[in-house]
Image 1 (cartoon, rainbow, N blue to C red):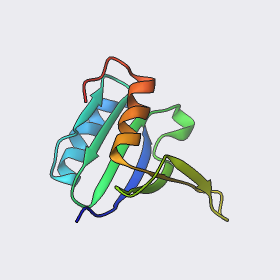
Image 2: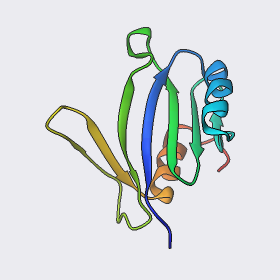
Image 3: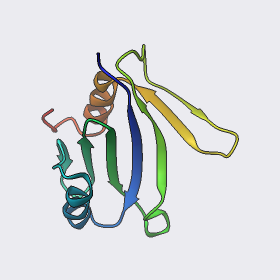
Amino acid sequence: IMKKRIHIAVGVKDINDSIESYNKYLAAKPEVVVNNEYALWRTEEVNFSIRKVSDAEVGKVRHIGFEDPSAIKFSEEVDLNGLTWEFFSQKDQQAEIKKYWPEVKL
């Protein structure tokens, strides 16, 4: 049985330095890296991504949600606190990555 993974997306200043740091926290290496722009880790428990952002957005949670194998399509909603929640399958996430970075091999 495939289970949901919590998804956390964070804004960072430097992708390479951040990859090195988060590799330690997650005890894993990213499965997707877009040079100087984006990285994605998928562990048993978490789907964690980082994206290079403006200085004002560094260190902030961009959005959270769930990678859910039963998700019918990508969707998002904003909760009562203004936090964006995304709901998607692995296939949906891969399609979104390809939309922004078609050169990435998944």
